[in-house]
Length: 494
Image 1 (cartoon, rainbow, N blue to C red):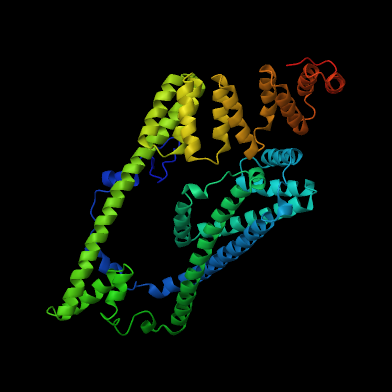
Image 2 (image 1 turned 90 degrees about the horizontal axis):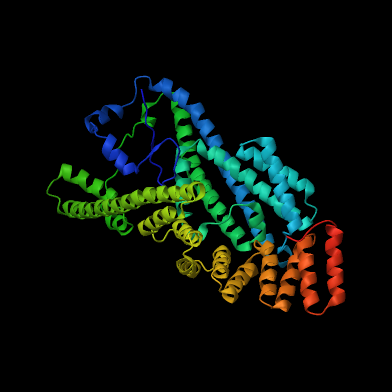
């Protein structure tokens, strides 16, 4: 029998082998049977084997309370570590901790951890920190890495414990949804975290939001669970049914109805008014409150339906959008059919014009398909909307260079390089461009900046020598040539 797996995840994540579908569409298509509510009252009565069930529930509740305590402890310690990192990174002395040599240590430790731990994400991280802390000598950097390890350890502890409690998970899911806003997204690598204070603070804000939510949910549940546990223990000792059944009906009070309405709660006044009307159908006050509560309920239902319709439309578009992006990537990489990929990306952008991935892909595809002017236009739009993204400026600069807009291209690349050292390897190319256009002093500066970061590149020393020779600095040129020969005696310039 052939089985189908429906992927109705809200974000539209593409999972191989599944059929993607919004949850509302799945419910509409497959959940056709109505619910027989007449069976509910019998389910709400005490079970025949209630005493036996209570004996089984007590140890389960005790386990749940212990689990909630783990969530609370892990969240608290994780937030403390996050606060410590933020405090340190706010200090002047903790700026620019990452150098090229240090980056290579991080990369090596990560590669080794992956080789030793396979695909086990948690094990990889523990091993990575273990290796890293043995090699980091700088006290400041060592302190930050140690706190980062603690944050990971306790956050993971809280996460593992939270998985066991669906209610805590629901609370965390709500916090995770809040993180989908652009302001709370950040690069995930630890190197970028330590290089970019803005990215680091965004990640810590995100981490604190989730941990804080988990802690509050766990504390609230622990209180309820503890009260219930004490009640069940007492019943287990006394077998007094009065402990489990309310002796007196809950008091009906319409005096606080307006207070409930003010905070958007129409359900409580509706129930209270309905109870009074059952006893006295002509009670004017109760009927008036019931009418108001029903009107507010109708309004809330209508709003929920509108939001559901709006969200469903977005979900359907998101599924199609992600599919187009995926197809465009495959077509561009494997088939090298950039025109076809371009058409797919244009459809994706038309579907969700505010999403960044499709717009970036469109600019890239226009570049590779030779539509340079259109690519430049798209990159400029991206930079306008995301002015802090250095990658967009760097790529725009490259397209401008290809389009023979040398000065504009170099200017954009310069802006990108001022923001981050990610593009430093391109400095040698900047020097070559300046040298080819006769801007020798600018070329010399570019070569020197490049060699300051990559002193063992003999090609750069040769180019610097040529530049100095043309500037009439013969002795300095000889030194540069000698340096190139020392690095690679038999090498040829590439």
